[in-house]
Image (tube, rainbow, N blue to C red; front, side, top):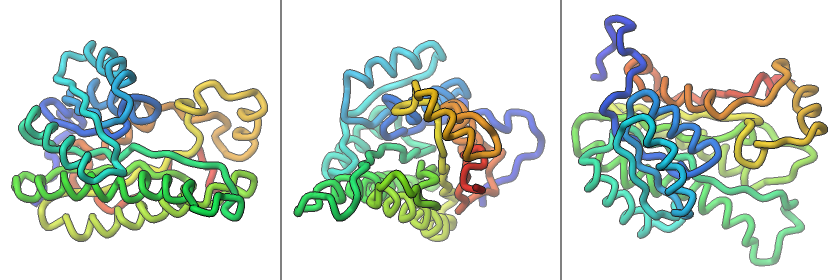
Length: 263
């Protein structure tokens, strides 16, 4: 049984936690890694672009923890097995997994090439990739007997469909990960492993780090809180979901979208 907190002292403290963040070398993933490092966690970044990983690690060094990166394409199961084994060898154990790595496409389904390469590229990374890393880390968390926390980064696109932004494989993969989150919460709860998801809306990072005035006006017109979200706000939720304060929370999808899905 995961013990509840007895007071607010250290309720959000991640000191000594070892955290894997896939795609943690940029965008929302780096915001999550940065927030967790600020909360005291050690960070393992799994990603494809090791040049960007070096820059991310340099950013984290200011917090005084232990940080390392491992080359990994989450769509490649043998590569995932190798990277996860390397992360465990380096850190000893992993307490938190953040499945963040993802890609997208803006191609209408019937306009895709005959091999459906865009479809498979997104599904293999955003859905199968989550399964690959969850399988490798989950077995070790289960067998280690100490439990842990898993956080899947999905999207409002797993809940709604944007009429003017066709990306059916992204919609399907994120909806799939949302329900995979529910399934894993049920399966892994007996091992004291909590599984939750964060579904961001429009966040000022990555592709939308420097939005056009027209895009900002569109976002403001579509949601009650008239601004884009910030990467650190996603990081703050990830810290909470990993922390002792969230010990009784599993199987949830945390929308952080400024109310976008309400409209």
